[in-house]
Amino acid sequence: MVLSSWRDGWRRVAAAPALIAGVYLITLLAALPLALSLRGALLNHLGDSLMAGEAADAVNYDWWQEFSSQATGVGTTFTPTIIGFATTLDSFSGLLDARIVVAPIAWALAAYLMVWTFLSGGILDRYARRRATRASGFFAASGTFFFRFLRLAAGAAAVYWFLFLYVHDWLFETWYVRMTRDVAVEHIAFYWRLLMYGIFSLLLAATATVFDFAKVRAVVEDRRSMTGAFVSALRFIARNPSRVAALWMVNAGLFLAVAAIWALIAPGGRGTGFWMWTGLIVSRCYILARLVVKLQLMAAETALFQRSLAHWGYAGAPEVPRAEPPMVEAV
Image: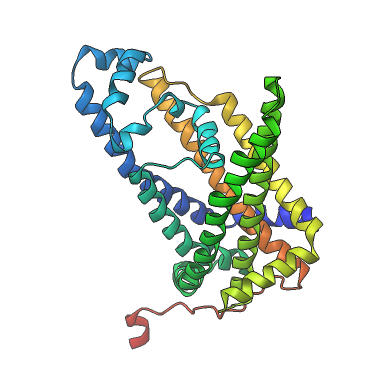
């Protein structure tokens, strides 16, 4: 059933290419203000100087250090870790180390998550029905579940807050320190830290999975109580632990495969003209692939739930009929 649900998830995603394009466009628009802000900061610092040409042709470490020493806001993120695959590693490292992001990025991320919360209802409704719902049906479902998902997001935020504030501190500041206090070999301490990362990653993944299935249950069964949806998601996972775990592992493997390909083809920081545009296109393709993997996970979770509870192609919420234009009604 897991592989069938996974394959069916791909079919549902492939059947809605406009949805992929829309989510991708929203992701680009969310990053655009930050990119323009950083561009302005670099332009003001470099201008038309000879240093600008040197910075474009190759990495100028001296200039980079000078810029970083006086940068503020988004400019503080302009570090060597933004080059190629280092960006992906730095993002995961920042998440697992509970690193605080700068205010402009935090606000942009909050706005993006708000938009994603709004779209999630329409996306899951589209995948649950397994057929086109048109723009009217899609946005009607998005609006219907938006405030319900906001309540669910508040519960998720509370759980993540507890994990990052207390569990993370206990794992890395208490347990890790205790286990490595008398360790004389460096690689042993490294293995202990990897273990801490693994445990914390599993806790984050488990939390995300529970709230994902709560959204699926809310949409498929048209639930108004998010507490009920959350409890029902816990019951569903408890009754199908092997299926849920297998589906999560398959999708995690898919994401790791995408990340591995990105590591091999990720462009460096050097090059202008053709190579610069090639690097830009490759990086955009990686972002698109990550979004497709995310959408496939949502579709596969919906398919697994519907197959398990005989809700195949069923959604509890009534479909919004498409309104006829005034001219047709007049006739």
